[in-house]
Image (spheres, rainbow, N blue to C red):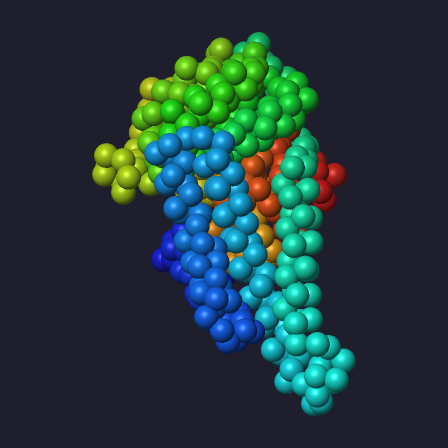
Length: 396
C-alpha cells in the first residue's frame, strides 16, 4: 500500500507546485527569447497571462458571465497541464545533455529553435489527446454483494445505482459537458443516482445563465437523485448551489440521513471546507446522523473526500462513494494523489463496507485528462455474502 504524506493539503500542494513550475518554465524560456526589447516585453506579457490568466478569467466570469468570459476561462486553463509537461520536457532534455557528446551532437544536427518548437508541438499533441480523454465517459460496472439482511419485501433485488462525482459544471461549456454526463447516466437505467460532490463550480446566476437547470432535471430515477457537497460548491457559494440544485431535482444531503422508500438509508456528509468557507463548525459525526434511522436498512454514504473511510466502516455503512481526487487528472499527478488518501481511486472493502472512489465525470480547470478518461460507475447491489465480482475487480 502506498505510504501517505501526512498533513498536506492537496490544494496547497497543487497551487505551490503550479507556481514553482511556472516560474521555472518562464525563466528557461527567457533564455531563448531574442535579446531585443519588443520580443522580451511580449514574452513577459505572455508569461504573465499564462501564469495568472486562469484565476483572473474565473473572477471575470463570476462578476460578468458571458460567452467571452467562458472562452477566456477555457483558453487560460490550458496553461495548467501545459506547464507540467513543459517542465517535464525541459527536465528530460537537460538530463540528455549530460550524456557525453550530447551537446555537440545537438549543435551539429539541430538548429537552435528546434528543441523548444518540438517540445511545444509535443505538448499541443498531448493536450489534444487529453481533450479526447476528457470527453469520453466510461461506464465502470460493479456488482457488489451486501451482508445486510433487511426483510426481502423491503429491498429491491439487483438495485442499480449510477454514481458520478466532480462534474464541475460552469458557464457555456458546462452545459455541453452536463449533456454528455446526463446521457451516460441515463444509459445505465438506474434505480438511484448518487452524486458525490463538486457538481457545480460557479455561482447560481452563472449556472442559470448557462441554462444547465433542465439538464440536471433530466437526471431522474425511481428512488431519486441524491448528492452531497464538495469543496467547490463552497468556493462558489454553498447555499446558492444547494438552492439551485434543489430547484432542479437534486436532493442535497448536508450532514443528513434519509430513508428512501423503506428500501435503504442514504447519508450525505458535508465537506470539511465548511470550516473555512462555511459556518466555521466541523461537520457532524456520521454516527449522530444515523441515530434516528432504521438500522435494519442498508446504509449508503455520500462523502466527497475519501478521507473518512474508517468512520464509515465503523458505523456499519454498506457502501461509501467518494470523488474529489480526480485520480490526479494528469499523469503523473496520480502517483502524488495516491499518497494523500488511504484510497485515491477505485474499489476497496473494509469489513462489510464497500468503498468506491471515482475519478470523476468531469474535470477541474482545463477539459483535459492525460493517461485516463472520465467515468461514471454503474453499481448493482445484491443481498448476499461476498464482495466484488472477480471480473469487475480486474477492470479496476
